[in-house]
Image (cartoon, rainbow, N blue to C red; front, side, top):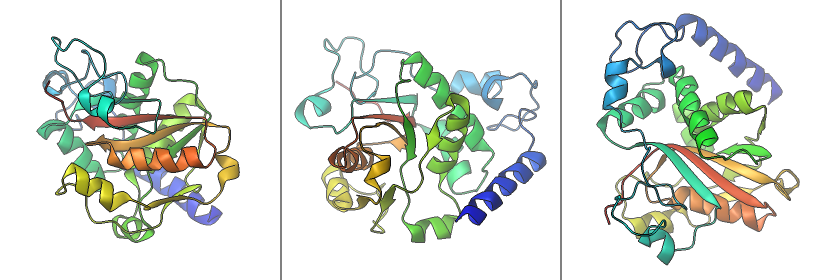
Length: 249
């Protein structure tokens, strides 16, 4: 396992050499200044829907400014097994393009910039009291098929920024669940029941955990992860994702 970890480090270094950062916009591929934030040109940055406005104080989804309370009906009516979740962007065609380029077109260098954006959101949201970073795991069959876990790669770069350990081993996905994106909210919950397992709770017990994933849709995935982590002695679970949908209330 240590050999594989070292090999992956070499691969990431090699990819950084092939795809040097901040030369081209990761969206439109236009040349950019080396100092351009997130390696995204100003024109594309203006099109991205960064979440600056009022959000649910639990799940982090944007709320209408006229909505009178700080928690969305979904979070009022349903238990969440985490203290707080934050997301950086509204999920739309542009943020989807960033994730798909990383996830399915294997442009691993994009993970560095996704991590930059999530890190800034964590600082803005004052989420800094965590001991360990845990990426939402893929099933081993899915990880072999994709060759990497995008959440793990994003976590690695966040960990470097905050000087925190990234734990890729203690939380596993023990069942190769079907893809979630065509399922209803209830079907997602059912699909994920019993899908996650802690294999070393000594690394979890009495710790505050930052859980990382790329997209927060209904929250079913991070909720199941949070539930298992709390059952194994975690103190608090924080969640950070790159993009989320909007609730209209």
